[in-house]
Length: 234
Image 1: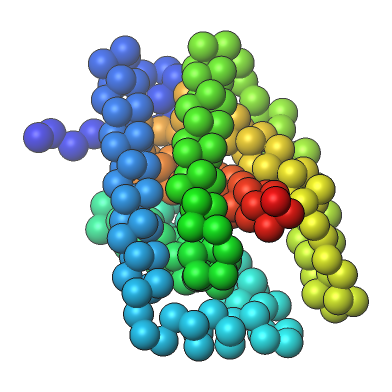
Image 2: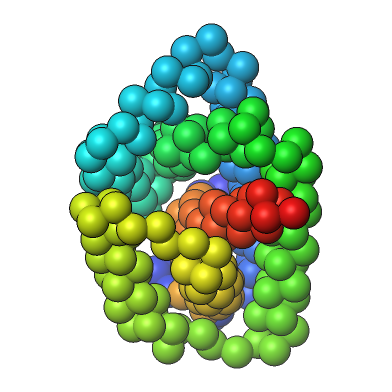
């Protein structure tokens, strides 16, 4: 297969090139989701899962975990956007999947063993339906949602500040905050789907799939919290 070097976004490419880019992007997204589920299942079945989950959330350990996750995420995204080699891009995507699986461990351990057994399947179905609905809206409308970049940046910093403050002062954010973050994750999906249409080069399908996967993971994280909170109140 002949290799091409692209300098412009996929929006300017031929129809066949755009279609191939979209297909590869969503195939990699599906692969990332499947890999995440496999790694997460292995972690939950591991004999040391409970101890690791407790150690990650004890005291201020969660702040360290969040900082480490942010650092690993930055590195993974840098590798995924690298023009050096496809291997480096796949390494970035793989690193991000593993990092997401690890940071999800405490939440999914609680949902699996200390809450209703229906929490994770229900959250998974809701997340999938929301993602498909938002994706359909973005593609059918053909709108450029790049204007959401500033909103997402500011919202991300505000959310992070609220999370840190809640940990320092021992506050419980509750279902309202989780609901707001579900909306935030939905906006991120619209933004990243728009980027798939308008911003990425045809050879950046791995980076595009990582961005979409990050948005889906964020959505799933807060949907799990909403479902678990509602389930516990029944």
